[in-house]
Image (cartoon, rainbow, N blue to C red; front, top):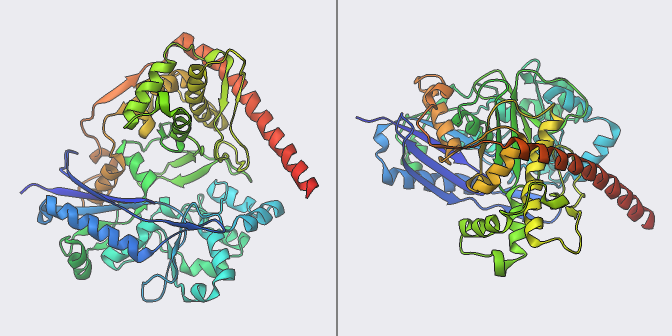
Amino acid sequence: MAELWLGLDVGTTAVKAAAYAPDGIRLAEAQAPSPVSQYGEGRSEQDMNAVWASVCNVLSELGRQVDFSQAISLGICGQGDGLWPVDRHGQPSAPAMLWNDTRAAADLDALAQSGTVDVIGRGCHTALWTGTSGMLWRWLRVHDPKAAAKTVHVMTCADWIGLCLTGVQATDASNASIPFLDFQTRSYGPAQLAALDCADLAPKLLPLRAATEQMGKVTAQAAAQTGLPEGLPVSVGTLDLAAMIVGMGMDRAGQTMMIMGTTAVVNILTDHVEPIDTPVGASVLHPTSDVVIRVFAPTTGASAFDWFTGLHPQTLGGQSAGEIAGKLNALVQDVPPGSNGVIFLPYLNGERAPFVASDIRAGFHGLSASTSKAEMGRAVMEGAAFSLRHCFKAEGGLPTSPVQLTGGGSKNDTWCQIIADVMGQPVMVSDASDQGLWGVACIGAAAAGQGAPVALAKRTETHRTFIPNHETTLAYDQAFARYLILSEAARDVQTRLKSLQETAQ
């Protein structure tokens, strides 16, 4: 009888599940939307029971495609951070408050000005933001004290789904990293809890266990709701980004990968982080090795591409993303690297890496009466690539070995070549787009005794490799130098404009 390894990825807007053969061939996949409620005061919430219902529907659909009796394991990953509170009965005590919730912004600003959050930076090497558990707990405690009083445990999305499946409460190091994990001791840090006045939260945090451990087994109730076999081993839930890194075979210091999605991400694996008060970006512990994943997430990635093409529906519109990309690629193909001096700062939605400036805005520089739409289009693609390079620069320098790239933007060969030339390193793109699901399926299999996850994740994949052109890279070195000057100037201008607005008030 053939074995099945199952993977479940509970994202912010969608739930996905897949069944794999041990050689990595995806035999079936199912998915469904997971609604998010966003409204005044920066709230971003999900009904926890509705998320579980979506998981049940997706797993049931997957079970109609494959024979679940052949499954030997299930791995779980999901969106990270946020606050998913439960009462003493293991039921939600309030809606889940998500990682992108900003209702605690004023509170965070006050803490930052007092220097209180420096302890967080030294402990978990992350620049604190509003959608983390400590900030959201502070908000809940003040604004919904009844819900706070009912809350016995707080968890992440993957932890909640693991509880629903197995009845067991636990979290892994990647999900627990921010903001209370002390990376030196690999345990919750009392100083970090005290800094955010969250000593009362300490007993509500879940016990730490390795992602490769068996969290528990599917209960009879969960089996009835999902179609999974009762008793199926389930691994401890992990962060979706961490699962993707495992699926890409990464667990060693020096390895890097980039995501060119709606937003962009640079991930750098390292075995050394220097404790500082105000780190750039975020850090999470790798789920299956001792390295740290440094995470830099610029707010604008492929969304800059979508914004620019959306401004020109007559010439750059299309019925599919591929058609639209083809039109822009054809438009910019004869524009030289550096776009004839046109530079685009891709801060359409502010910026969060390699610096934090929520109110900074995008802009073109170097426009003249002769500037063409083609030059502006190429400048947009180059600007997004420059933001990735900026993240590497902030962390110590450009990569010294090939970089893996994934996300929607990685399907655009022209853009991939620009990124390779900007980085000065080969960029490798896999034709597979399921690294997160495959990675967590391997973690699940590891928890069932099948071996080490990264070793299990090795499979036959077709890669497209984009080799940098030396002369083009030199041209981009000059263009990037201009980009850095303009980026710094834009931050200074925004500060001065903000001061002007405050004076007027």
